Length: 452
Image (cartoon, helix red, strand yellow):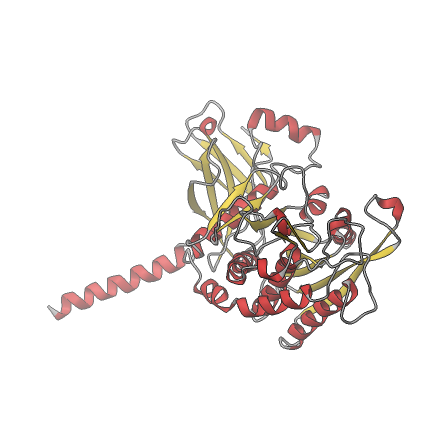
């Protein structure tokens, strides 16, 4: 009896060793739950109150005072990043990025001023020139966007997103990542997305390889103007295809599909999947448009230059608290004040950002030049260029053409091509992701070419 049990044990050990060497790493990473747990609502509240306490953060407000105006706000943000860096052996490179705007730049520019962004870069250990970005907006506004003297506390819009970005830096600075992570405070959003434009151009000039930008604009309100109260749902806005795609790419889409499979849409699907995996209590809503109807956010500036970018924000807005002078009219309170921010909710959306920054920070590069074949055949064929480095292999994803998310997947090992037998190419969309040794995956790459 003892002999049989020992033989059985040996078989189990051998099988376990085989699995550990031949299969990709576990599907979930326990460290991600640690990251979620470390996000603090109290610290987010502290930063929101400090930022809102400067009275106004209008782009053209006071830059000298230590207690009022955008100058005091950006110095506070930089000091927070500097303090975080001091606590992690100077792991953050913190600096200002500046651009000059004048009245010739738009109707919302009342005078010449510097638009100053605050940047904190946590350099990757393996791919330092690959960047995943989280951003919040520094500036606020009153009813009149050119009014830079009236109170505009901007507690939710967008001290919440800025405080979340600082909190993500606090937590993630305690870890090492293969890719670089950027924590970004952007200015000039209310006057025409000037901060995002300047930063996107800076990234282009410095040849950054941007994985994507997670733009957080209003992540603290749970009580909609429609009366709905919801502390679990949030929206992920993403455009379908890059605005700078070529005529050839547009023509290919007509015949091969991909109308909703651009790089920003793949980033949105990644965030959806990561959230469903590690925070199943949350309800991510993928919104198939660049931003809210007729409106915009700072991710657009990155999209304009061909980078992947999404907007993460609350599901139910309260327009009485947005872009409003602080006042009471007909018994209705207007103004973006601290009392309108739910800090536990802001914590949840900050955690959503943090786990996605971490997952992409640990992920290998996505496969390039993915091509697909299988026309008038009973099987679909895919091939791609190999990713350099020590990886587990690749995973093929596919879904119904009407499905919003990837439904099916197959890990195919460390190969540069694979045939999915019995799956008709006409009926599905396909993509390929790289899988790291630790199980973290890259964004999915949609095929950009066709072969026979």
